[in-house]
Length: 275
View (cartoon, rainbow, N blue to C red):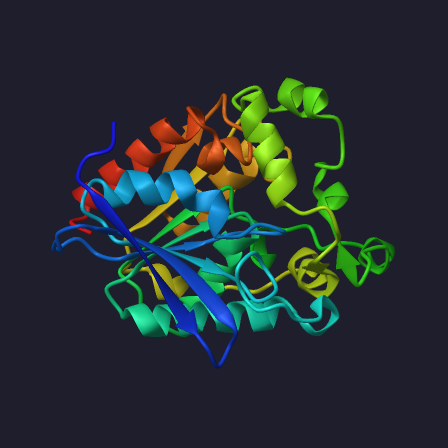
């Protein structure tokens, strides 16, 4: 059950063509603002259940849409890269201020880590985050060459029958699967350069996070980032680690019922660290 009434708002970073979806508690509170950063092919829609959960409990939540995603300005994906996405996140953090907690999913986790090298943050939560260079076996040249300039949901295993997705991601309902499949888009629109850079290895300076409260979350049914990889990331960052053995990649954030336990774990982390 949602707590207090919620009001919806938006922030536009006009110079970047970036649209941020904001869900705010009706009454201001002392809690820190949350910036949610989506991963490949996604958008602020992936965070909708979290936005409602946290705004109903006194946190203002802001979900960025990276350029050429969901409600943000369209752009040629061939001209976008991991660096341009990082700059989008830096601009959002700049706008929200240094008390912001960054929460990233998939590639969004790596973008949040990279952005936090350049802007002060109050805390970081990484949900099924892609790994930085120090933890990644670098992709081989032919694997990088095989990534097209622009790719779609088939690259992340979502161009398949809903029945099959439900079998693999047992924490999602049929309506979850159909919604996610639809919102990942019918046409390829993700920047191949960003994926190539990520797979080749993005270096992250973990010293930046020495004083910042940090939490890493992983899912046992995740086919994009394994639970073992999530645990390695937590060890590398010396972060709190919360494993969810029966959760899939999207189930951790966008599952109708499965998001709830994960949101509660994040809330406990925020409260423990007075964020």
